[in-house]
Length: 458
Length: 124
Image (cartoon, rainbow over all chains, first blue to last red; front, top):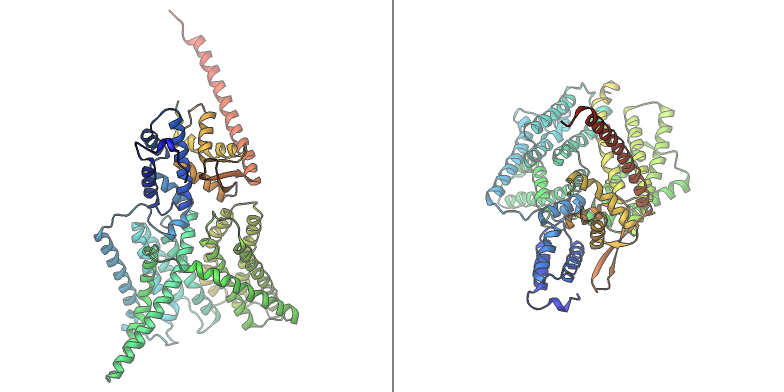
């Protein structure tokens, strides 16, 4: 770095500037490039002031003052670069109050235990998990654990009474529908409701997570990042839990005790419920501790899924099997498309919007377009089945899902093409993504609440 | 005269965009230019301008490029994009609209004041 030789002696400008840079570097939202940019500004200002006759020390003080209060400047940076904050979360250097940490840990543990107890409570009254005649667990599985996770965010974001009331309202309405509807046992509307309930409930978690009732785009993007990391943390904890359980059973059986019943009745269910809250807490508070996994996995799997979709499309079209898709294939296709959508959602929210367009963007566009084509194929097949064999809850649900995907993927494709051609910023893709999320939740709510009465609970 | 905070915030985007539209430039030069244009009345907290520049870049109105300046330092230059030019046109229309409306209403206000002066106030 070239320095002005005139400035070098009495007051050590270089030391002062590097101290200032170090101070900036403590802010996670200001990255190395921003510091370079601000340094260039500072030096420009100092030179200018120096030319008009000020000494280095005076010029330095004035220039630093004019850059502004670092606290409020970094808050501005945080507004623009919310993703960075996510990657390395400490807005202001945090006072490491031991009390605060302990309180949070206690709340989390209480909520985790609460979820585990809630889950075991019906069992105390003789309800059996696998019993098909009393499908209490199958109906309510997400309602045992996710409300506790949402409650954690109500506490963490200080949403107060309003948060609790809204959350209680949502859970009550969902529980009433799931348990009040006279479902035909093993009917399609019952299975559809069970499948869509977690989506509705997860959105409720998201509303609490956002802390501002889902109002700002940056918080919505944060929730998508949270969801991706959450899945990975949960899977890792499940793996660890599995190993732990296997050892528990194995070690005790060596010395002649059978503890398998205990593992199955207590460790597994209580662990599975409690881990939801613990995973949420880990993602929320340990973001800075590890490099995030989800963006890496997204990068690895985006090309592979693109390849899969393209290979599938080519095979279908080449063999002419495109319009004669059977039921199982359709279900598989829809699951695949939902997975791909998740990948796209995550890839968009983990991308640094400031980066120039690169090969990965083109790849993602290829994934979106191939998914779009597969979706059209699926839509044609479903329309054909409805035309031939009439309406069933499953077919209408599949039709609705594929239409929603069609609109969503088309929007992504459109905005991505414009972005790659420099006609709009990455911002417009993010906005499309976050504005569309409630659509998924609303559709899931329709399937849970409206489908059963519409189709006579069949 | 100092500008109100709100007005300062509202005018920063159109000003920055229009200044960059004059030709590729960098942060410190933009600040200097703003001072020059406003005769020193508009002075920002310099650090606040960079997040604004980054936001405009995300929105696709600006493009940035790192170069080595004649001082030998790395410097980030900003240039306008076609989308940015479009925005300048829109913003200009909006500001002219506001400006026109204000001018009209102030002119009426002025006339009225002068009218009431004639009738209401008689020097003794």
